[in-house]
Amino acid sequence: MSIKINKLEIENVKRVKAVKLEPSASGLTIIGGKNNQGKTSVLDAIAWTLGGNNFRPSKATREGSVIPPCLSITMSNGLLVERKGKNADLKITDPSGQKAGQQLLDSFVEKLALDLPRFMRANDAEKANTLLNIIGVGEKLHALEQQEKELYNERLAIGRIADQKKKFADEQKYFPDAPKELVSPSELIRQQQEILARNGENQRKRDRLNEITHEKHRISDEIQRLEAQLADLKEKVEERKTAYELVAADEESARKTVSELVDESTEKLEKNLAEVEEINRKVRANLDKDKAEDDAREYASQYSAMTVKIEEVRKEKAALLSQADLPLPELRVEDGKLLYKGQQWDNMSGSDQLKVATAIVRKLNPQCGFVLIDKLEQMDLETLKEFGVWLEQEGLQVIATRVSTGEECSIIISNGYGGMNTPSPSKTWKKGEF
Ligand SMILES: Nc1ncnc2c1ncn2[C@@H]1O[C@H](COP(=O)(O)OP(=O)(O)OP(=O)(O)O)[C@@H](O)[C@H]1O
Ligand SMILES: [Mg+2]
Image (cartoon, rainbow, N blue to C red; front, side, top):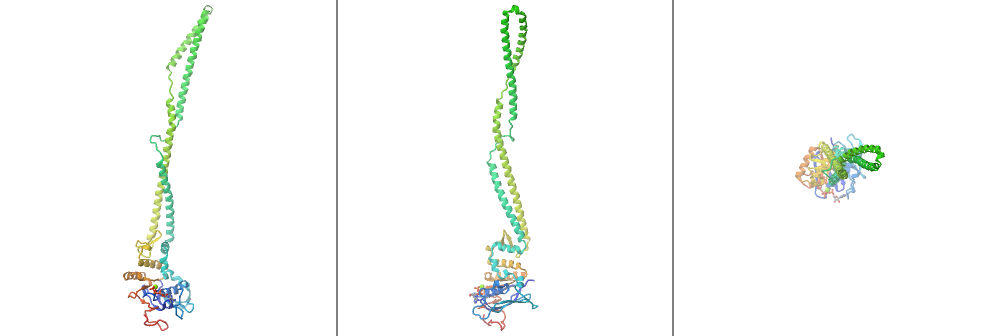
């Protein structure tokens, strides 16, 4: 059960002379009045009483008062919180009569409930963080956001490389007529060597023919020389004739062989060899381009994979937030910013800002059942009514000020005085003053 303010009595604080108020347990209690009458001073006094000396106004004692401030607040849990005397010392009395200090108040009084403007002044990220911490997803969401950021940066880097690789691949020359693999010149060289070997053999045979021819001439010469000595050398002549015939036969066979010889040309091979280098240059270029395209494809696929991962993290984030128990139905957190009815803080109407701030602050410490709101005149009567209905549904007590003397006000402050009931004689509050 959250703790509320049942009753308050304030004297001689800032502009307040004497104010007594019993706010509604839930919904709006509006402190009305014209400007400069002490409305905000009442809220300042409540904040000081419950929030401790950090909330003490710089000029707490009302000017012209010889009596020090006197503050008294009765809480719904029965605690009586008082500040009295020269030093406005804190005195807390619990129903059983035991005394307690500021620490006890701090356990159920939410500081931002006493100082809503502090929440409203916070930047977008601080507001969103407050809400995320309340709904208990702050740390997890922060981790997911961190993860998303890292993935995003990683993908950005990969995307840049992918673009460069693609550009590089596109710039590479391509030769569609070149073979897929590098051509080896060794087979051509081997063929060339074989032909050269065969041609060498032919040459050897031609040399042999020359030798034989030469031999024939030498023998013929010898016959002529020997014929002169035919008589005595007849036997030799016969011998040489036989030899001559043999050689002539050899010659005939060799001549026949030689006449059938055809030399093969190596011209084509030489041309092919010259072409190999050019072909291989193209093949290498094509292989380089293929490699560059593979690289580009690889990076493009990595980029797509990163996109999938980022989408997953984003979905996880959205799921985390959609499951969270948010203080207002149309309140969301997106990209580290609060959104209410789809609008960021600086684009919300003043009344929506107040509603959002109240709803969030209310959740900060569920034990704290009240929120103080200054300057509620930015809400028109209809919005004010809706706000009041919502507060009642939430079981939240709001004590607010408004420059108005209309019927919506629970109490009108005038010249520092206000109170629903006739003040007790001990108060300095003067009857009929407002
Ligand atoms: N200690 C003090 N003693 C007397 N007057 C003070 C003291 N502190 C502030 N004031 C005066 O109180 C006035 C403001 O009071 P307060 O802010 O409570 O009025 P308000 O009703 O909220 O006015 P508004 O409608 O303009 O917000 C100022 O004129 C200020 O100078
Ligand atoms: Mg004011």
